[in-house]
Amino acid sequence: MSGTMRGVLLRGPHQMRLEELPRPVPRADQVLVRVRYSACCATDFDLIDGTMPDQARYPIILGHEWSGEVVEAPPGYAHLAGKAVVADNLVTCGICPACVGGRPNLCRKMEELGFSLNGAHAEYLVTLARSVRVLPSGLSLKAAALAEPVGVALYGARRARIGPGDRVVVLGAGPIGLFTMQVCRAAGAAEVWQADLRAERLDLARRLGATGILDLSKMSLAEALGSANAEADVVMECSGNPKALSQAIKVVRPGGRVGVIGYYGDELAEIRPSDIMMRDLEVLGAVCPTGTWDAALHLIADGRVNTEAVITHTFPLERFAEAYEVARHGTGGAIKVMLEI
Image (cartoon, rainbow, N blue to C red; front, side, top):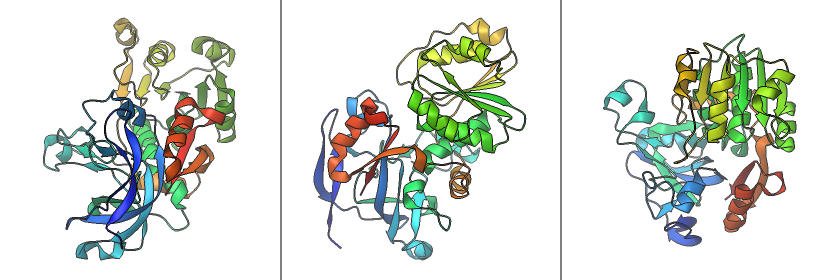
C-alpha cells in the first residue's frame, strides 16, 4: 500500500486544492478506512469561506458525511477489517458531565472529523475503532454515506418529541429537511407538511411521503397553512434561514414545539420573546447525530428514509471544485452533491 493518497486539502479560506498527501497511519485505537463516498455539506461553505473560526482548524480535509471500507484494524477490532462502514465523527473526552450524561455533542473538548480533524474528502481517513458502525446487509455505501444527516434529523425529531398524532411542519426541503420529514413520518406523526420556495424540492418531498407541500414562493407561511387548513403542533426549522425561525415561532400552535436543526452561522433572527412566553412554547435545539447512528442506519436500510433520492449529483474526487460550485448555487436542481472516491 502506498504511503501517500489523494486528498482535497483546505489550507485556509478559499485555498482548497487536490494534493498528494501522506496516507494517515492509525493509532492503536483507530481503524484505517478506504473512503468510497463523501458528501458536500452546506456547513462546509463556512469553513471554505472562513466564517466558522471557532470550529475551523486549517489546514483541514473536509468531509463529515461519508462511507467506506476498513482496510486496517487493531487486534481488538480485527472483525472490522474488510467491512463496509460509517462512523460517528465526534471524538470526545468521555469523562465530562456532558459525556457521562449521554450528551457527548456538548463535550467542551469535542473534536470532529471534517471540522477540526481531517475528514473524508480523501482516499483514506483514520477514525476511532469504537465509533465504527458496520453497514446492515444489503445497504449500499452510497446510501449509507448520508447516515450522518439522517442521524441529525432523527436526533432533532427526538428532541422535539415527535410521535403518533403529531401534526408537523418542516421548513426547508434541503437534505436535512427532507430527511426530517421522513423521520417524522417514521415516528408516527399524523401529518407532516413540507415548506420550501423551490418547486423541484417540493415535488421530491411529495414523492418521498410528505402529507402535503407549502409553496412559500407564492405566499407566506401563515397564509400557506391557512390555505391548506393545517395547524402545526410542531415546526421543525431545517432551512437555516433566520426569517424562517421567526415565522416558525409565530405559526406553531399555542403550547407547541419548535425544533431548530438548521445552521445559521453568525446570522441573527428577529424574535419577539413574548411570542414564546405568552404562548407557552418550547424551542429545542439539536446538534450532531447524538445517540442515533444505529437507528439512522436501520431507517435507511429498511427503506423508511430514502437517502439516494436526495443525491442529485455525483462527481469524482478530482472534480471537487465543480461539485462545490454546483452545491453552493443549486445548479441543475442540486440538492445533495456527492464525491465518489
